[in-house]
Amino acid sequence: MVADADASDRAPALRTRGRRPSTLLGIRTELAVRWRIVLGVLGVASVFALWAYAAYRPQAGSSVLVPSPARTWHALSQMWSAGTLRSDLAASAQRVAIGYSISVALGIVLGIAIGSFASVEAFLEPQLGFLRYIPATALTPLFLLWLGIDESPKIWLIAVGTVFYNVLMIADVARNVPREMLNAAYTLGAGRRTILRRVILPHSWPGIIDVARINLAAAWLMLVVAELLAAQKGLAYQINLAQRFRAVDTMFALLIVFGVIGLISDLALRALRNRLAAWARP
Amino acid sequence: MTLHKKLEVRGVSKTFTGRKASIAALEGVDMHVDHGELVCLLGASGCGKSTLLSIIGGLEPTTEGEVRIDDELVIGPGADRGMVFQAYSLFPWLSVSRNIEFGLEVARWPKARRRERVDELLGIMSLREFAGSLPRELSGGLRQRVAIARALGPEPDVLLLDEPFGALDAETKRHMQDFLLSVWHRTGTTILMVTHDVEEAIYLSQRIYVLASRPGHVSAVIDVPFGANRGPTVKRDPRFLDLRDELGDLLVS
Ligand SMILES: Nc1ncnc2c1ncn2[C@@H]1O[C@H](COP(=O)(O)OP(=O)(O)O)[C@@H](O)[C@H]1O
Ligand SMILES: [Mg+2]
Image (cartoon, rainbow over all chains, first blue to last red; front, side, top):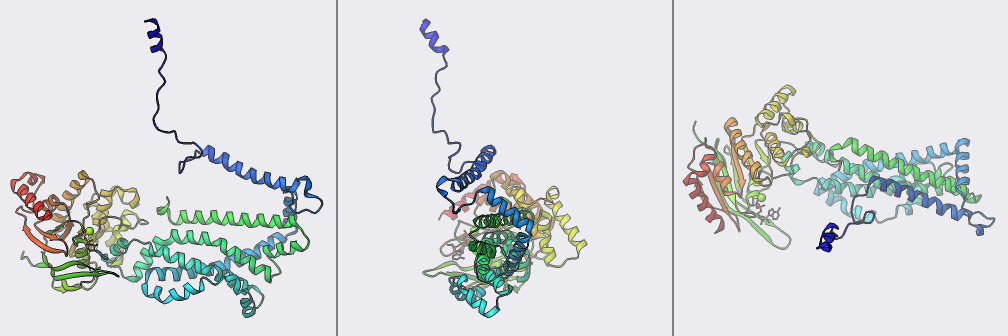
């Protein structure tokens, strides 16, 4: 009797069913904000740790192949105070801005036309299918020959190197306007122009901005190619120049500048998308 | 008021030609809707109801036959035939009132008149409190109310509805049916509605065209014996129950 009372006093261990999902490694499970921050910081720190190890390891010897974070920072601030960073940045950013604007504008016009009109698609499909597989970088010598060595070949190289991606991806965005939305507009009396302007375009804006955001990386890639070949200014030109002096710290500093620009423009385009198309926010 | 044929479908056939095979969706469909009538097209899914409605809306060409509104040949879509789809047709970037205003802007109504009309429709549809909301903030029933208001905006001759309540739960569906009846009474619009729901067809319409499939054709025309001013009580009327069984059998066979 006594032993029985004792047993019922102790809470019986509750048996469990199923498997408890993992906190950090659950597939497609939400991560707590706290963990998000911790892991983000850890990620950045591990990159610095690797970098520091590569820079300071004893067998590095005298010839420096990997600059230390401190030296890189020093090179960066020197370029900044000398004013070269600002002018190089301005030159490169201007090329990308003009070239990529042309590309996006063409992408919107042609992409919407292809995605909306089967006739335009039929007319442009063969050319696009052919041209998109020509590496734009292979056009550099031709562009230099045709357009000289000033700004225009660089700008056109950026435009041409990205325009096919923009056109084809924006055409897909336009194709994704639901049929029923177009039909609703038709039965409200809308004509083609109204539908393009007031249904297809507004529905496509968020997608267009996303496409522009994704392909912006290709624009910077083309910029580097253009500046390596013929330039007196620009971020990629400076990287190339640094090679002659084996100035790895300058190279690293410039690479970081590229990364930061990319990050900022990405955030800016995301913000633009959310402002322009609050209705499409997930 | 003399009844006349507002909408007439004459010998309409439709064949979709695919790459491998062609599908006969409709064959020799004849039907009509009189001025101010509410008529239902009833049929199992896949029998060609949507295809017929799209043809009447001018969104799809016929293979044979023709559609006339007030004895005029339909050759394409127009604001004279307002249309409500099953779902996903509201413009998600426009507020409720801007959605309703869309057709009025297209028709170039002056601003003051547009305001008035939108306000009137918000009232008829009990949507006032949602005037500034985006479609995604609304429930399915409310969205369909907006779609109906938008389609009624430019005062169409005929309102075409393609299973507008098909995606709603039973309770909301009942609400919306009564709602549609009250809108029909208040506006006097001619309405053609597609449904696969037998009770819905009997409850709402004055006449029912039963569509059978493969290829879609009218297999029966049923006059509903209840007047225009019917309430939910007709659902217990023995004639309602008989009609329901009869139509149920027709749909199965
Ligand atoms: N655009 C189309 N192309 C090919 N076949 C179609 C098309 N639209 C409908 N169909 C076919 O026509 C038939 C009728 O379809 P639909 O009118 O949508 O039926 P319901 O609305 O009664 O369910 C179906 O067999 C469907 O597969
Ligand atoms: Mg259908």
